[in-house]
Image (cartoon, rainbow, N blue to C red; front, side, top):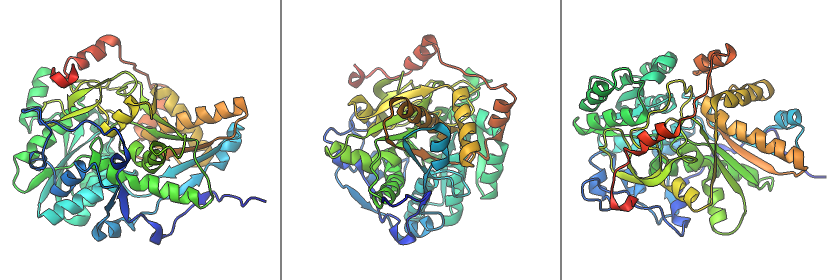
Length: 459
């Protein structure tokens, strides 16, 4: 008789990974390099170190080393909330009447409520080691800003957070949390930077975007002594730090010889998606598995499913290096009615390359359907999920119901990136039936595409 798999699959503290896994080392076809916007040549470490901390820059440019040691000072911080549990969703399986096995990696067991702390801790640690005294960043729905505030407080670094204006209005408790940890929060766009003032001149009523907030955070960082900018998604070193998610999930499943057939992650800039798929995608690239990987994005910000694969700026003011990615254009601003995160106009270069080469699938979901899935999951599994995570939940339920239709028994793994306890205004709108959906028209997307730079590499 087969041994019953526990509801919660825990690793011991000693089993927390001691290395991050660099997926790029196992990619035969590498992502295109980051370009200096002035020369259009591959950006050097010196170029990037004007904005970012030195060690993350080394990691950003490292395409060869498979395993990157996690410093002892970061390992120590991780023990405060890791390892994170992997959960067998027995209740959800029963409610759906599916033959599928469903697992989720629950990353919401820390105060920030999300996976973002995995990279925030690393970047704050490296800033402290470098002798910096302050950092700037942006945040959309607030998970990254909350995580960065926690990490900055732990390592004794001052932090300024530019939060997308519409999100700061929707989520006042996120603002309070960041300020409780000592961070200064500024709704973006603001009149505190040249970039913000320019954006407000063009549209005084804008709700903002991550591209706007990044512009302000970068400008402040480069103008401030002993200060650098930190980013919570999109860049390769962030995906590297988040690989701890997939490594823990794989180690827990390996104990019971469970091999996922389908792995699902929500997709905004790519941090959690890249993190949960990393070691499993490495096996697929090596020809050792035929696992399907599904990215789920909001229909209101569809960079995978309706975007273009091109070099683009990471921010609205066009100050960052150029990244080859799936993009809606640096000038794209999601509809203000979009309640969750996942607002970024582009996608990480590794994930974009995997999608372009056919290793990764993508689908877009409207937010009312996503919240239907969120509430269903909350009632059955007892966890109120973040709106971002609920995109993955929606796809996991759909795949489980497809197994029910066909009678196939598949193993489904998805990332529960965080909890929704700071997202109650969105749940209130859903419950009051005032939540609406927005799918950009072709004309709206065309305005975003028009902001993609006209350079030879995009021809």
